[in-house]
Length: 322
Image (cartoon, rainbow, N blue to C red; front, side, top):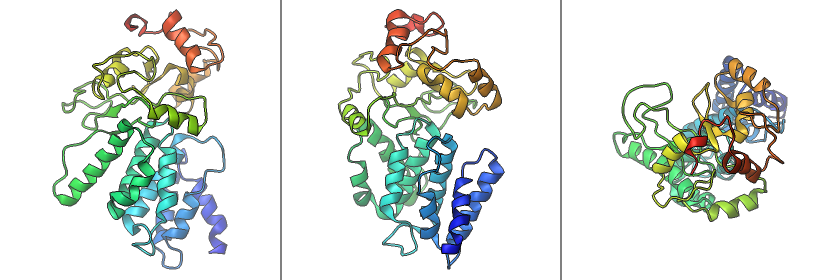
């Protein structure tokens, strides 16, 4: 295997390439190596499980790796039940780590990977990795487990809410029966674009964030801090989609995101591509992307001061403040 190391490193680096053909070729090559008796899935996956060389990479890099790992797990299983399978611990650990990513597709891919492992080993062996999730996050994984169990038992159930932005956020779900840009009924959103909301930003480290999410009140919006005893995972979705003054709907992809991260979204994540990048180039880091006002140190409280207490004059949701 030593002679393959340089090649595998290069192939892993091309996962998530901006050129979709390159990304697909890299994925197919990984699957071919995994199926090769003299190489195997374990060796192939070891390169995919390594962190990307660059500290900052586009979300598609994480999504591509997670999706490839899910394909590998689906085909060869996990150890020790399957000798040629992937090691369970590093596979689930990387999924849980990347579940906290701010990008919706990355989080959904992470849930799918954990679900693929669950399909092979059951809940008992997955449970330890889920122990620190708060209730609304846990529901996302439970919905995926139920979907998988339903497929195993018979005809698949109706589409269930799957995480598209619940990695530490306010309990937002994407109704997969209606996607942005698609018509038709089904789900609570009808013809509206389904909300795809990222988790709130946190300035502290991982331990601090975990302590915070453990104590989150489900009746409080985690962005604007509005308290409403009628909030449920469904009604808070409506608040995010229509009202929350800390959020805005991207003009290009209709994803609901934090105003504080609009520049990053347009620069790196928006699926619209060049038009979104061009819009981002007109914005200045450290300034409000709507009105160009300075926003202090850019911390959560600074953004609340600007968007809620003072009121951003260009915020289309300013009239909806409570």
